[in-house]
Image (cartoon, rainbow, N blue to C red; front, side, top):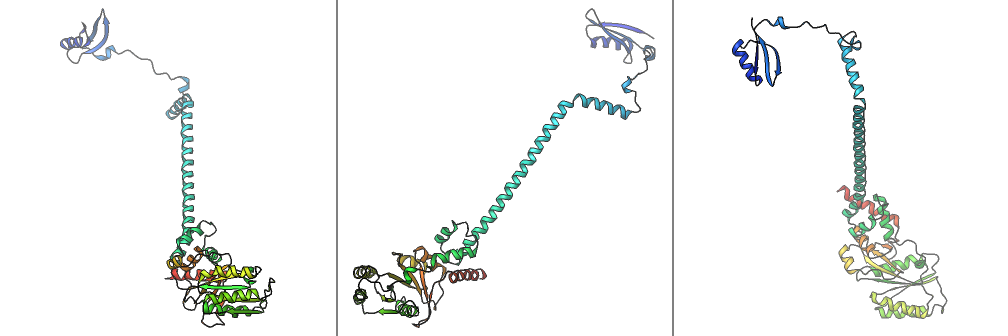
Length: 357
């Protein structure tokens, strides 16, 4: 067997020379650099002749434990100890970020739940005005009432509307000396006037109630003036009362001036009569807005049809206060003081009837 030594300028050239001389199975014994050249010692002898005996592997005392799993566990523990600070801080930061993310998501869910509840409450609140609008109450009146947060159910809104329409007890009217009746032609004011006389005569505090009548307003005004001048000078006599029907509402001012001239202590009330069955548009366009504090509304011919919610809207928007409801053509029956509870019940019943359709 042969051992050769080859020198060349680089490893590739040296290896080529070795293969030429010993073949591709040559064993490289050593490779060194001598005087700037690569020197390879090679042989075609048995490899075992060149293997040096090695010392047995001796483990350090820290590795002398029972089995491999213990060795692996010990190595992992050492690694964890070395990286404890950086690893623990990283895990801690990740944990904190996760907690904050969860809290943020919970907060979003709570906000969403709250908004859903508010939306549901707003929808329920909005549904009540919608019911009244569907039944005939005007949007103007609904918008006005919706500003009050207490109007959150049908009963509350119905009661509020009834209170806005009904005048209620009125000391001024109850102690009036003169009641002037006005209204459009065919509104039923003549029948109403006779009904009112009958109603007042039944009251204990009124000893005498007269209906002044004439073919025209001039004659009525003369009778009113004469009565005012002759009931006792400037002394008020509340047990005596007169009711006068004026065909032209423009004469109310003349009547008030004349009464004040003859007896300034006399109390005067005005009742504006309107028959039921008018549209919202007609009332808003033709029925005058209440001009005086002592002016009250009487709604007549209720035996012919019910008072609509559209009419109620128009009367309220025109600032009228209803004192009387009148029905039945007889002169001694069918006249009632307006009551909040009655109007409220009428409103609720109308709403329920519309819902059943």
